[in-house]
Image: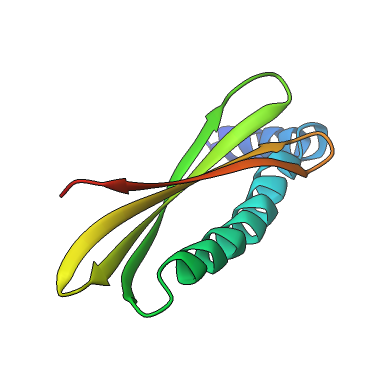
Length: 108
């Protein structure tokens, strides 16, 4: 007897892909790239003569129905000491408009 659940599983997956496209994942990736580039530029401007030794996307928080906050972490070496610098960028997810940016140094 053949296993008939496999073709049904494939059909369900294809139907789900059609009905619920991964549009939000693609949009978030574009946002991440756009706002990540802004965060990098800001850190380079704030620490022009310092070495940025590490960069990490920390994730996204939903602030409201239309606003999200992306956080980026940088490791900056300043005068021989390493500092953690967080850049948080709030933006509107409906029209992809930049709302605010905050740069904070964290203690190690």
